[in-house]
Image (cartoon, rainbow, N blue to C red):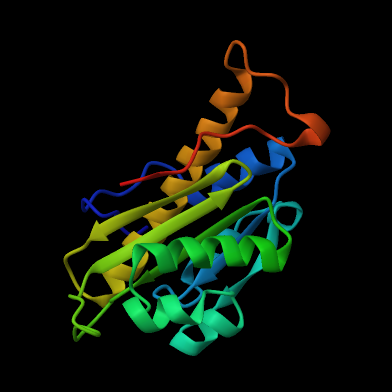
Length: 192
C-alpha cells in the first residue's frame, strides 16, 4: 500500500472504509479526476460491494474537458487555470450532478516532473461536494510523480470520509430535525 501525504501507510483501506459507510447510508459517489487520471476510481472499484455506491467517474486530464464534461465554468479555467481550489470544487460538484450521485470527489494538481502554468510540482487540490455543501483541501506534496498521485488518492478518500462523518454527526445532533426522504443533513461549506 502506498503512503499518505505525511509518508505514513494508512491503517486498513481508505477506499473500503468509505465505500462501506456510504453503503450503510444508502448514498452514492461519483469521481472527477485530473491529476490522478483514474487511480481514484480504480481504488474504489477494487472494493467488493462498490456497485451499490459508485455511480461512475470522469477523467478530465485535458483542461477543455474539465469544462466540456464536468461543467467547470470556462471563464474560471481561463482566469485561474486547472490547478485551483475553485476549479476543484467545480469538478466535485460537476461530477456529482453529471453522474446523479449524492457525493462528488475531485482531484486536480501538478504531479510533475515539471511545474505547470507557474504552479509547483506537488501542489494538489482535492474537493468533495455533498448534500449539505462542499470542501476543498490544498496539499503540498513532496516526492515523485507516483507518490504524489497515490498520496492524493489516500487524502481524497480521507476528506470524503471526514465529510460523511460530519454529515452523520449533524444528522444526529440534538435539535437537528431528521432529514426527509433519506437525505442527510451535513456540515456547511468549509475550506482549508
